[in-house]
Image (cartoon, rainbow, N blue to C red; front, side, top):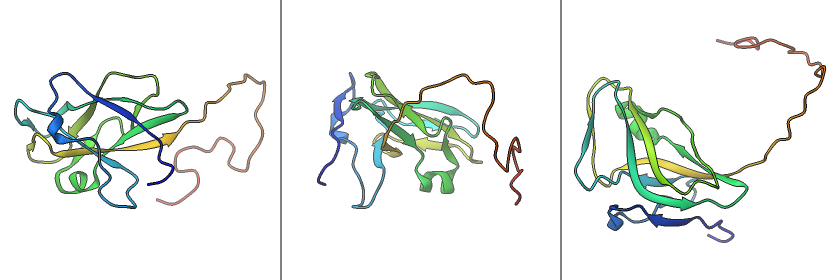
Length: 153
């Protein structure tokens, strides 16, 4: 992969380093898989329950970038697993342990096992805004039309 942006990674204290670093599963994948780092054993999520799943990773995201943590579509479809704050953001100035907040929206308990691919991470550029207070905003055809105002179901 030429021109790849480097994300420096260190292992969190007590992490199982044999799980390896995040990996893109295909040549065209936008997200690299994150694994549940649960060396003390699996965690069972009851329906409606949520938990912070450790990845065992700490990372240095370059300035002007963020890492977005996103759900894995197969886990969402088959088991109702979702990420509560999707996408989660890892800012360039954060250096702590990376965890994934998982919610079981399914109808059955789900066991998260050590090494399971639990989420994916996507590197994304960040453009910071300059906020300016003004007395009026420009006009548009939509104006103040909100939720559902553009039609459809």
